[in-house]
Length: 226
Image (cartoon, rainbow, N blue to C red; front, side, top):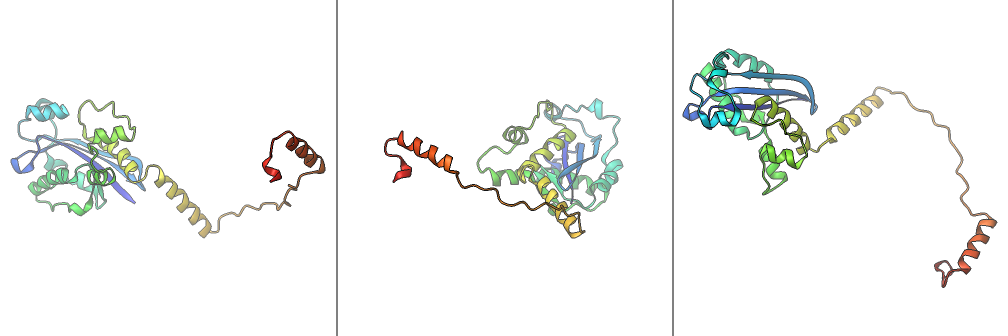
């Protein structure tokens, strides 16, 4: 099972107001385990970077000036994602920006059904508790000390760990082990021959019984005599 953990950084909060994506970070999971493959790209937005957004992610107009626009990297991004489910923290936000960029390119929008929203998962699992990425990292004791700014790839890496905890911690690995064991049995795996051993005697000896009686004589109203 292939999944893509994804995060974006943007110039603002709404693509309807003309805001654009400036960074995409994705990493690949196979059966809930990171493969080490990732997709990371800084993007020139072609609009000035608001200071409020720069304060969040630290990406300046100068830094982004020589980066490609989205239309030059959109196909590579789509190729990496494919038709795999996308694990996203607050999926409606990132999907709105991604689909706005794809629409500008003349590409079809990605369906919301292709996304898995970890904010919704966290709120369902911990009703009333904070559901931000930082809050979930604290809840699951995930080290996010390197997160001085929001960064798409770093946040995707943290989100992958949070996602694993939300779906049951290390249980997916156990499921894989069980599946491998079942497959081995189905394929006629090696059987281990064990030598049958007779049961060991467990009845007390006469000497042990005598010692026990001596011990009982030292106890006031012993339970064993009732």
